Length: 587
Ligand code: ARG
Image (cartoon, helix red, strand yellow):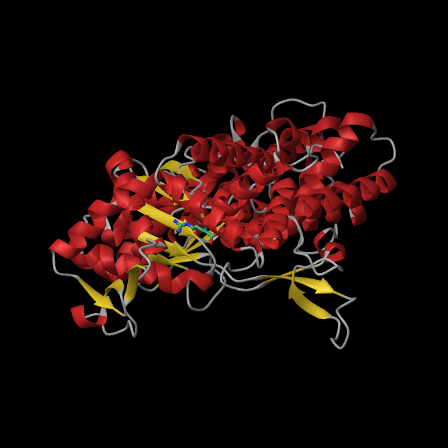
């Protein structure tokens, strides 16, 4: 638990004992009983030095007390440490004064590269509400890894291949549609969806149209120029719609290489699997019988190529991983995809091992649970309850529509709470709060849990919500705006509620590292809720006791407290950014 407050104490002790900091970190832990923040059992280091443990504990206690970093007491062979508000403030605040975002920085991943495959929707289909999960868990992991020192490659593995395109092209030609018509549509993906439906309906019972769609599908596979051109048009139109939603969410990507890119790169992978004797034929399909190769946990063989020759998902993922490893030499590759696809990832990760890929142990499936929306007007015969997101008409809820509704609702709340905020600023706040509410709701609990979504809950300013943390940030900003004094002295901070805020900030670094190690944005989300709660307790104390106010009668004390206000505001702002939220200065 190396963090910004323990680090100076660890440095002092490691210096006195001649032990590496990492060893000391392992020896330091919160005591099993008593009120100290940390305890060090002196047995091992005393043995190494050839002195009695209680004598060493006493010597170290004197050194720590002299430093003012914490209060130290020797309890027999144990060194008990209690942080003091001033000690924590002195360790923490000068480091954060220039740039409070360093509270959420670490070098744990320095020199390492992570490829993060996330969002990865299928084109000519809408981004549905549930796509927020992969998109925002992946976006947050990319930012968290970056903050922890990793080099990050953000990959959108677009699903841009499949037989649907034959049907789309066939319909497009039959109706004589034009690019201008597609580009003029209010929503280009809806335009393509409707074309697909008309084309499928027309082909029902019409063998010639069926054949036409099949021919176009084949033409596309064979690289026919006209088929390719139309495919590109459909792809561009879909990407343009996706990018509107990504812009609302503040998400971007380094690579958009999709499934089509690997279409001609799967042959060599298949040939290699065959050459190594790993494949077999099962009812006409080419498979890898993982069980037969000693992997007993796989009941069924892994499908590589269907009987009709269609190549499948697993082969494509293997080809893409080879490509990514060649280009980025990743130390870790994350696949942020729902838990429903666990078998797929387990299978091809196992195949990568059988192929002795050097990266086989670096692959991680970052699974997550489903998104459930409260439905109070369910279809006939059903009770109101949590269900996968559908509109009243039974259609899937679109991500863009949910975000826009969030923004509308947030605009109304902000207009009511703070009518003097108007115009562009109100609009920007409505966006930050409306979108942030939806995003935070998705990230606040362990990702493998199912998520329950209800606008009324997600938008509350006083619950475990994004707006609650954003409000805490805005409250701190408003105090900063009102402060007119000079430079503060951290040693003047002596209150326990101030110490609680300081420790919550100091622990963020360790929590960032844990979030990265467990691929869990919720670790940071929960930490920020805790920090916001500590801030609220501190600031509310001033309501009862004027001397506890940040801007109190004593200018020196106000200036010292303002250091903490700035550090907390900066840490919360950066924490929200790492989760993919924007932190407005007023709301
Ligand atoms: N396009 C896929 C889907 O919508 C998700 C792709 C996930 N990424 C991957 N490398 N398999 O189900």
